[in-house]
Image 1 (cartoon, rainbow, N blue to C red):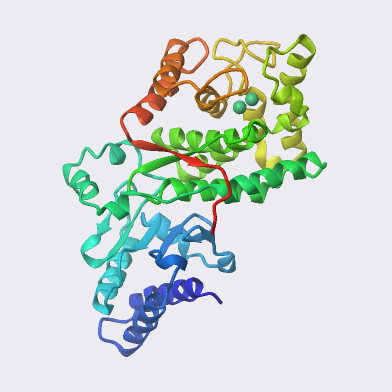
Image 2 (image 1 turned 180 degrees about the vertical axis):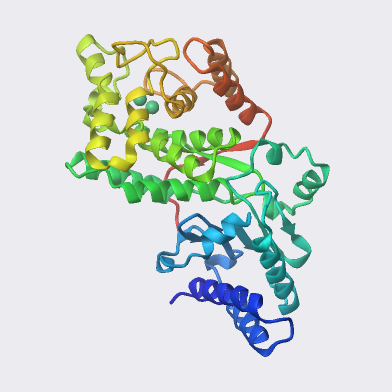
Length: 399
Ligand SMILES: [Fe+2]
Ligand SMILES: [Fe+2]
């Protein structure tokens, strides 16, 4: 059993024991002692601070999923109590740890918990609170106290050293798998999205880590990861629930999967496409939806998004709809993020557009091509610094 797993088991055990025995009872003290010892012994490579992210059905330690915790149901209970992340700022004392446990227990017993609250116990060296649930109110930091708490974070807390090399690698593998005829590996797609979500929330504020394109033939990988990140950021700003946010992330990641059928010369052609090439290019939404549907019924939303992400609000675009209908909300959302990332990236036939120009483009077409409400929220999210966009390299990072 790995150290973080041992700690989590001891942590859950002490919470259970604390509900049975009063303070000072030997059983209770013993349980807290052993959880504290496990916590104290936790180390991360490079001296990073231990940080746990609790998702509905699993736990991430640092950036790694703890697969051994399959039947551990405390993650769900912690999430329900508004505790989605637990982070150690420094080594804590046993007394501090004990107070922290009491606080967690109290929160778990509350019948109603405001899950948008970002609770910080900085004085105790332990920070915990909600991630992925920071709706606009929390992020706008209307509460001056909360704002001050963010502002007073030491510099090390506000910078996030994230590289998405592994996620890019996994997605490249996923594409080759599908290319060789395998079905869409759902678990891996979800793992990439979870990992992106953790990268977005390692900070107090939501961060949108975006990749910068290094090679043109990597365009689909870079673009897919960026669309996943932007889509999750927009869904979060709209107040969607974590599960919905992750589903939107998977849909964003897979929206262009149909492009694996397009020959590279067409995909990277510098000039204008001829009619035949255009027809090949425009078939990627239908191909993508088909690939996803054949793979997994659970990916229904991703299939819809793959099919609809080039359809405009006024019905224009492609594939041509036989009768007018409104596209799914997730498709309209991914459509905005898709165009934003495409225009912000240098392509063989044009330079990258600056952010202001891209935003103006979206605003001009809000109401005809794009859903105006989604454009407004998207631009607000980017402009107000609610989300800090970080451009990262997609080159493999030295370890
Ligand atoms: Fe597309
Ligand atoms: Fe796209």
